[in-house]
Amino acid sequence: MFILVNLKTYPCDPVAVAEAVRDVDESTDARIGVAPQATHLERVAETGAETWAQHVDPIEYGSNTGHTLAESVADAGAVGTLINHSEHRLKLADIDGAVRAASRTDLETVVCANNPAQVGAAAALGPDAVAVEPPELIGTGTPVSQADPEVVEGAVGAAASVDIDVSVLCGAGISTGDDVVSARDLGSEGVLLASGVAKADDPRTALEDLVDPL
Ligand SMILES: O=C(CO)COP(=O)(O)O
Image: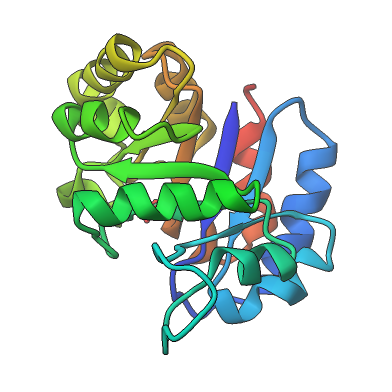
């Protein structure tokens, strides 16, 4: 299972979380990555944790003030990027452009989607993975794998019917090892989560709990 921790803009210490991600990753068969804010990418990558960007724009080098260039996040040490997170939605053409921008510099891509229909559309753009996250469950602590198992199974089916090589993650409300196991049982190859780690009193313990049953 791939556990990707999105730090959003939560007021946590990104380096401390990254060090916990690095250490817990070494203690488990699961793969763990962390997606800090763009300004923290370099410091996070220097810890040795698998580092992801939260977003890249569908642009090339040039006159793009305020945008995020795939080459720059790769230079900062990121190995992958989220695209089209529910809190950073893009138009379909821009999702396509962002996937291409990431591919230019060999960043792994996870395109987020709200539901199975969007997962099918996202999978058709050729990312490495899609992540289904019902927006109404994000940040609630109610795990998608329990509250809406059909959406996870539907996403797995939708992606497989378009491109069998596109992995499926799920997210929203995931915070325990049991949630991760439920997600796996529904066919998900990983989870995308945020508050369960970023807002935990002790992110390291939260990470250890997440991988414990795997
Ligand atoms: O948006 C999410 C991960 O990208 C999910 O957030 P929560 O884990 O806080 O529900």
